[in-house]
Image (cartoon, rainbow over all chains, first blue to last red; front, side):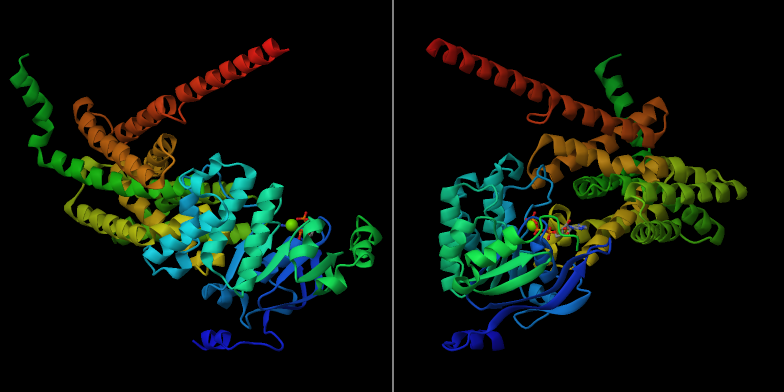
Length: 260
Length: 301
Ligand SMILES: Nc1ncnc2c1ncn2[C@@H]1O[C@H](COP(=O)(O)OP(=O)(O)OP(=O)(O)O)[C@@H](O)[C@H]1O
Ligand SMILES: [Mg+2]
């Protein structure tokens, strides 16, 4: 209740913080740090581009925000809540880099999109008219309506991405974490998705998006976070952070095989 | 032999009360197993099913010694095996299938040793191979209760369980309790195994938990249809298996499982999309298409 009231008050001055990663370090089971001392803040209603080399720790950062990896130190706050609590309230929509799902599973695109609505349904997961309507719109928005009844294994790589993006849209989470949504997606689809994400931002959604497509970053990201050597080098307004000098530090300056 | 005598011969089994009961109970068990088998094969838990079913043996013998319902002992040891597998896996570098193999064979062996020490093992051998024709009233009640509970639980949780099988990451990210779903699925698995022991016994129960789902999986890409086909093939196998075993005077459990295997082979060969024949035809069509495309191209040149 409180939250709804808060969001209705127009926040003109300093916008509230939607996502806060504070001095976080994490390691996979093997013990080597995959992320060290990373700090990042996202203002409500903004798009943040996450940029870095392969293996720099982008996906690790996503998994940490989702609480799939427990930080060795530091804290993660999503809308001032722990990630688990934020997920229970349905605030977070997450699209992993590669869906590690069984593509032969007997589900259709439509089934997958409806799964995005489960958090809004009662415990029997009964679908209401509103769920159907939103799922339908989500499919339309990613241009996948014609594939509605396809079994997911019969889609191309880019279509699969779009189906899972539609599921994230259907979730209506205030925070969206998209790990390389443009990987394997053609240019016109990418443009459609960018337009869609910008619209969502204008509606007050907050997005963290990792991408290797540097050309589009300047045009649609409000802020940029540079990640190299398994830490966040810098984050802030695109104008100040997304500079040739900084990109040199991320891509050119750093040795290609950092030894921790 | 005229028609009337043929009819009498064919309906003869149903003059016996025990045959009618056995057929009905096996149909119920077949339904429960078929529903669960869809989740088991989609989750990739076939080996887990095998493990739980073998691990219940020491529990059954113990229950026999203590003179308590065997379902209790079986259930406790079924869960014990699952918990030990999870515990050992999380603390070693050994892969899960190996851990499963080690744990269930050890428990099964323990059960064999205990069994050989208990003198009157007539009753216990029924647990190994099943004895649906001799099922007692109290066992029927037990089976109906367990089967009913399992079916209702799966019905209530079916969407969450399906999502858990398909994409646990997403299930977690929308706030579902995946740990609860994991143990819920394992618990109904253990319960179903306990219920099915009556019909086919410890050794064959895994077939009931895997084959109907696998057959249905070959036949369709839609989950609801898969459930239905799984139940149909399983119930037919159970009913006819029981029926045939009367005539050939053979092991009922064996007859049921052989029929399920036959259904699977039929699906494997004749399934409309994923069957061998359909796949072959599709490949030939593809080759023809490629060739004619090639012909058009070379004509253009
Ligand atoms: N499951 C894992 N177990 C152990 N180490 C891992 C695991 N996943 C990733 N790593 C290591 O953690 C580091 C960061 O990986 P991460 O997946 O976060 O990179 P990324 O920035 O997403 O790269 P990409 O652009 O290729 O997606 C890498 O050095 C990687 O080798
Ligand atoms: Mg990655």
